Length: 393
Ligand SMILES: CC(=O)SCCNC(=O)CCNC(=O)[C@H](O)C(C)(C)COP(=O)(O)OP(=O)(O)OC[C@H]1O[C@@H](n2cnc3c(N)ncnc32)[C@H](O)[C@@H]1OP(=O)(O)O
Ligand SMILES: O=C(O)CCC(=O)C(=O)O
Image (cartoon, rainbow, N blue to C red):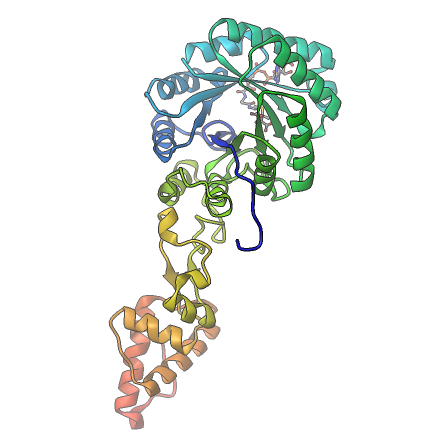
């Protein structure tokens, strides 16, 4: 962007598709599927993969362990409550990092734990001490941080940081209440208070998870949590593909292999049974699909006129559609590209038919239908006296 300069970001990505992503209602990945997704994330250069929550089931534990022992460059993390049994399960999995979480908001203390803040912080400290003593690296995660009094968060993080060696403290916007301004404020306050790297974990209940994640990074968060296709609890999490591409085009961070994003999205879509909406940024079916005449005419000369980044950058493909909004230049370019060349009058007749057909059928025209219309136009132009009243596609 010519009009603004961003300060460089010191970030890493922790992808949580295999943990929070799998918490999407109805989603269950098999071990083989989790291994395949983890392998792709690793090959893209993702720094941390949250592989699961081992205490959930024997199969989950076995899968996390297998992922942790693949020899990936990515560090492997798993989730744990502030409970010794959960830490034991994490230890059995050979993970690099355990994310020990507690909520400290009044709401969760009162209705979920029925315990005081001091009691829960005590549980967290015990679990952290136990995990540290057994050689695990620690992320101390504050669930529902965005609804927790900020002084309480500061106190918990400061105490833990001063008493134990933790690699990260984590702020979760568990119910997606934040916006970019409040995210910046929250992360900025914690950044001023602690010396430990900060993680940000955003949910998309108000459609702001990606924006909030980037705002957090600007305020000093180091580790950004994402999921492929933005899957996750309720409205999902910050989308890996959006965060990764934004890091590249807005902040110049180009060390991740973005060319694998579309294939990974398709893989997770197949495994999860959840197809991203057609207009989903980066990986949606329409992300590089164009119909409007003015746009397509310009794209045929220079795609960047109407594309922020080229489809090749994310392993996608451009798709030019013929429909109600097609213009003559666009139509000429499209039919030329599929091997047809029409005279000016034929082209005008064709565009006429395209408009009538698409308005009648209320959808765009397929390649086969277009070819049929072209041959109709050619016949009519050759023998105008035999021109039929009505045409079909
Ligand atoms: C924001 C998040 O995404 S948090 C992660 C959410 N993920 C999941 O829940 C994963 C799927 N969950 C499960 O398979 C199960 O709920 C399990 C295995 C985790 C626990 O199962 P159960 O032992 O049957 O416990 P149950 O689910 O009934 O209740 C949860 C218990 O954990 C306690 N708990 C919840 N979070 C924490 C925490 N961070 N630290 C300590 N205890 C906690 C609750 O207070 C409750 O305790 P109680 O049984 O004494 O009332
Ligand atoms: O902060 C984390 O790493 C985990 C918490 C979480 O998944 C959430 O609050 O949504």
